[in-house]
Image (cartoon, rainbow, N blue to C red; front, side):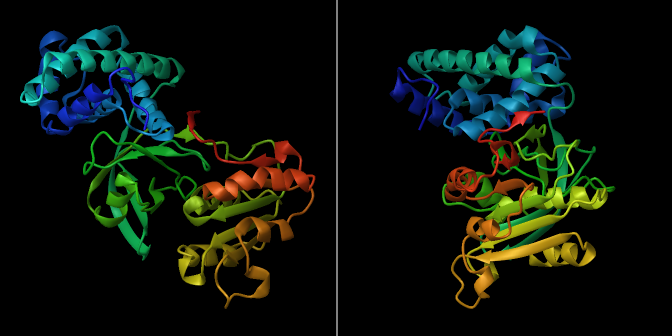
Length: 370
């Protein structure tokens, strides 16, 4: 696992332990320290979000994609609140707060390790802020629906207090107060709605602490936070009206369903084929919504693909990509989202069939701000 303090791994372990011992209520102490030194720099209500995100970045341990989510949030926050000229003040306040609240674990060696880690984190945030656009750093949302179509999948419907400006195919960083400071990418499963609500599909994975909480613990009525939307490479080209072949595996369905809704909102004569992969029929978790979409639009064809269901029709037996190749037509734009194994094999198989590289759209490993 990558660390921020490669030259001193034992100190890194201690820093992680020290940070884990700091209660989120220390954010109030952090805000008071910043306020004493630079009044009005950071809104009081945003202090917990900022404190936990910067502390998590300092400690490290996230994989590259989730580190990118943290940096997207913090880069926008530093830009939105004009914090870059005061990064030293903020850093000193963070270290002082952690030292006070982790005093039994705090040693001179640990303090030095924390300073080095914070220096690296601050440089990373500066680079992220230089790339960040203008606007809010995070949106407060409330969970208004939490459905469990299968034991390890949840469909969350959230309502932002202020409208989230996203486009179909994008992803947004998501954080739950149950695990503050941990931001993870999720793609909305819908095109923007009149009521501003956003639908998120989450699968609980073995090592996914955030996904586990979103699926198994979060309930309707709870708050979440969403960060600035990032491009994943799955947005439709507004200048193109080519037919679409969409290939989804598991919860990779979410961004592709949002593309279907985008076409439905402004039909332009294109035909869309959506291949939805699942292990068995019972694993096809969003079947009701898909059925409604297909019944409502004659230009849409939805094809299920079952990789391990002997009861399925012969034309539906196989992995999503293999079934999709049977439905490929020249001139289609092909969008794929799903498990790593499917995505790894997709490009070479499609290129071997003569599909032009520019017509193959795969999700980026690390979304970038639009």
